[in-house]
Length: 369
Image: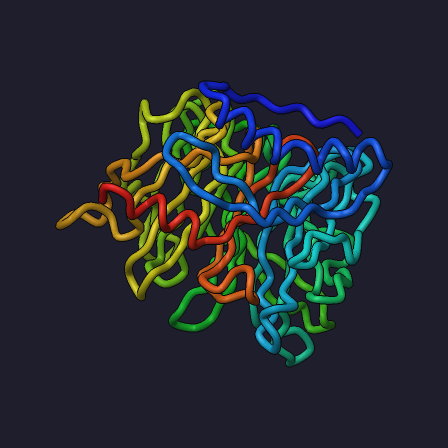
């Protein structure tokens, strides 16, 4: 196994720190091992890339997007679901030590994945993982934690359109009635009505069916729209219009299709990518957006600027060790001793996913704030 790293060396101390990070990877490769890497040293210093606590075992082809499933019975046994984007791809299920505990094989280029809790199937609340399958123009839906398919071999999306290949997916649970919706983006498409939103329900036989409820969202046509993220409590959906910015809309179809904001313009080296939302309170927290070509994440306030919840000024840029990250997810739930204030997971182009202790990110955000 080969690992490629991009970084700038400015001092002997920097060289030593990067060597200490790379050495376990090199040794693992030389010894032919495929195990996860547990990194104990997460010391922070200005200008250095944040190191993960855990690097997962590698997927076979192309890691792309992760989602965190919280095991409410025992949070220390929560799981990370990650996509392996290939024509013979799959979904990998990792434990909190980065070890592969299950794999769903044979998916045709699964792209992004998201998780929702409590969809009623056969009268029982059921947690689900939903991934976009690009080469079949479908959504694939799996019951958690056993990863049994509950989609009747796939749910078609963007029917009747010339451009159909689905990419991004985010699941919205409406607080008023617990209805669950899938908001789906595609590889390319029209300047308006670029995203389609589907309500997910039981078909009466314990399988999920999807009903189209709206088409919305602008598209700059500069590149593509892949990352989509929903804030259930505040009722917003955000998506990365790559090389243009982050667009914000209401997640509830009943609230209309007007664009609320476009932020992050000219604040990324090239592509603005994966979006995740960390909550510090009912209406506060942070929005993290990958600056893919800079190996970093831009941080914005979840609640927006003072007096304007739809204006998001760049708060901080944090360098990470994950390379060219497409997708990410984050939770504020304590996940065992390593992640007492939550976990941030980011895809890396070395076929792995990186787990970061939220306390380390919080420390960097708080500096000079």
